[in-house]
Length: 298
Ligand code: HMG
Ligand code: MG
Image (tube, rainbow, N blue to C red; front, top):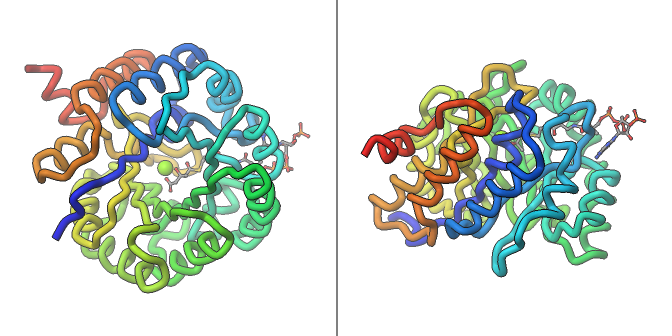
């Protein structure tokens, strides 16, 4: 019924830290990323080559990429919004990037200052550069279960953007509940609509835990045979263009659930919890993870 194995895509160093007001040094980010790779995570989104005026927290991504110990077998993707970002990513030696589009027009405007179709058109040259440099590209769709400006989002809008990203050559499409308003029945309906267009093996889920629904929604995704889950150690962060959005679901919480279900991840929960505590302390917060706090109290 459930996948035997799940790949966790750790997005803490990017999605987690992009929205923290604390200005961290590259060294702290590098230490965090190296702790995550030591915990056995195979995919660690390590930064973003976006406009520093829009997201100042990611402005040092080149330094971060220069400082991390790249572990064999681990992929370190970076977010890129356009050709300029792609050029910077290539210069930093990035081997995997992620492009991001929204299922909601208003969110697309607020986040990347263009329409959905303009954003897709911007990715075409990025995909060409990726092919020329043998760089893998992941695609994100934001606001798949709700938009901070438009409210409900129709599954058909998600399918259209997901399909366009796949047709462009993205190897995996991550479906983002950017503001964490999704609930299980809606999650299932949205996933089934996307699965009619894209094989389950090429779909990932990306939940923010704003309303405490993330694990319930991930369970539904597992039932729908989705085997890639995005999460952030320490449950930090949010989205600068989605007011009130709290952090991604905590990697600690996802791992505890998967471990309890006998689903293999290859990731050491205790080591992730350590990384979560490290980064929470660095930003001056308590880790936003029930499992992380329970382990700490033991
Ligand atoms: P714009 O202002 O419309 O673009 O921004 P522009 O082309 O007019 O450029 C303006 C300035 O930015 C220029 O500099 C460009 O050179 C520079 P100036 O001449 O004024 O000095 N610029 C850049 N600088 C560095 N790197 C670049 C770059 N591009 C242009 N790549 C743009 C458009 C897309 C650049 C901007 O809106 C942007 O960077 N947005 C990023 C927003 C972002 O990172 N959001 C968070 C990530 S998405 C997310 O969190 C959701 C996700 O987690 C999934 C989910 O939860 O659903 C993925
Ligand atoms: Mg996100």
